[in-house]
Length: 156
Image (cartoon, rainbow, N blue to C red; front, side, top):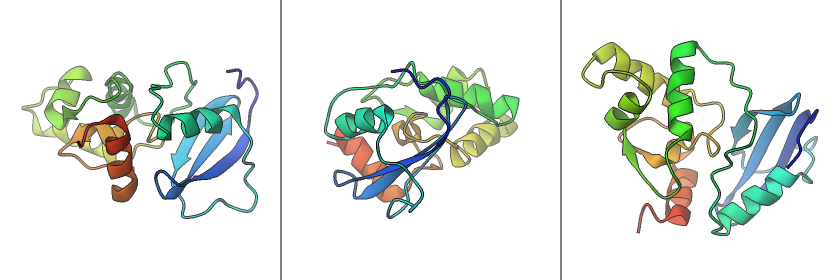
């Protein structure tokens, strides 16, 4: 999928999760994912990534590994979110395990706070799958998180 130069906001409703998925692009990189109740009037609904997301919410396994992301977060949170991206489809990790994956000490309160802050402030949920983390805050709304976990077979 070539997203080179793509900029703008794209959104589409997905019945499988009961919400809209809105994706923001800048310079061909995804900079945001959100879940508004309905698509904004100025959003386009025709984009290859939305097609892939549609297949994903229909149950097709996809981890979106080659989708370019434009993260504008502090360096320590970037390490957490990059580690989060490595959590495989259908698997669940704890906050402690994610801390270790990101190179943090799960026994250090400041490191755990960094991990929790990164999860809560995740600008690109779904592509940075915070729904695969148990016991932490999530940028993904609760109902959407539950739907994504069901789709991936995490909550059986």
